[in-house]
Image (cartoon, rainbow, N blue to C red):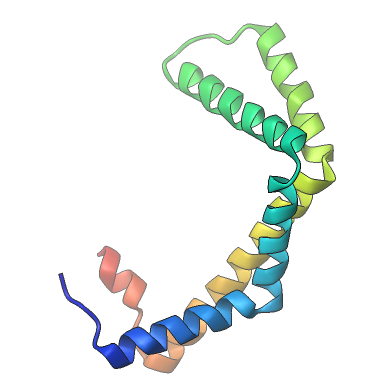
Length: 121
């Protein structure tokens, strides 16, 4: 495993701090904190994700899902998407992803090398 020089390590830490302080990332982090502070909403979000993953796994395994379970899932999904704390978190995440994708593209242009493509190829 390659280690970064102390200069690159410091530059990476400074860069990470600057990214974390950007308004878009701060809004996302605040939305995550707000959701974490509400146990009821956290439980709703976790229940939704657990049921969603279970239904997907069962469906991929070829099981025909009972319509009452599917309808119950849709009702839960409606409650989740209507929850302002979950909506704020999801919106913040999408905005942060877009911002970080733009940052990555800017870095690739500035460095004249697509490091992510090289790393995954």
